[in-house]
Length: 174
Image: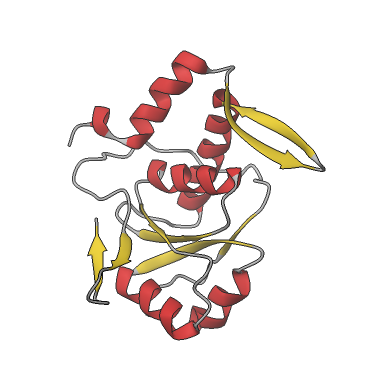
């Protein structure tokens, strides 16, 4: 797969064309506000740099558990820009055994979790064989002191999902 077929490449191309246009909208304090492509890209760069500063390596898998929100998009793109694979998990996973299985089976090394669901992952952190000691909560980004490196994107999956078919057998999708 060449670089021009990746989600980061597409986002970069869109940002070049539509830098000042609204990329996302979100409601805060009762009012909707937009985030431009350029502002979102700056947040994505900071997010990816933060992952790299925490030791995320190309090909690592990162769980993402959050309600639908702008920070979810920033985190997913940050994961991809850092060269890792996103493992989106449903906020409806409430049974510890189900969440433990999905995190372990996907080989997640880190998790990005909204504040409403952080307790689920923190309760399992010591039981997961591949996890690193860091857990990341979604909140307003800080400016980590790390350089965003260019990552060769060929040959790794951008996301992993699990689906249950009519046989109730869970199948993985890359």
